[in-house]
Image (cartoon, rainbow, N blue to C red; front, top):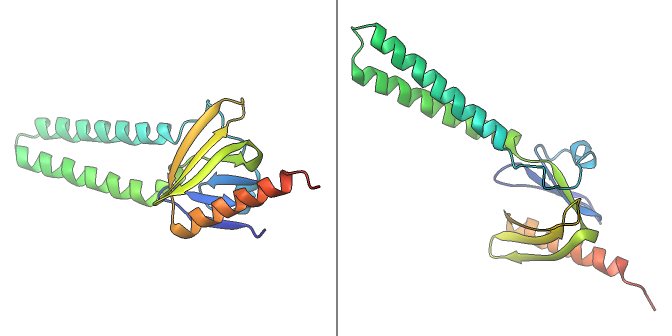
Length: 161
């Protein structure tokens, strides 16, 4: 089966004959180095927290500077904070893929995989053999390809006779 990668809202879904691999870049070198998903992994929480903290700090700085200068009006402070917030939001959109998690789900550990409407429903065992559920928004092409790859892997694992 041919290796494929598909763009997601955040990152990429790489699919080969052995696994579903979630990456930031869609690059196969990154996919080959991806570890199995485990409960310790969080889906990009730290960068979101850092961006929020930076926004609060910058907003606080502008607010203090506005208080120090009596010539600044309250409206200009609100405008400055709004522009900073918009700038951070746009930067976040550009860097959105960099916040995505990198992990693999081997087909051997997938208990159930369904493509429903516009998302992929995956029930699987993680690296510690705990049951997990993942729902990922994907394109029609990605959903069909993932389902087909999983079914093929199950047929290969079945004893023939």
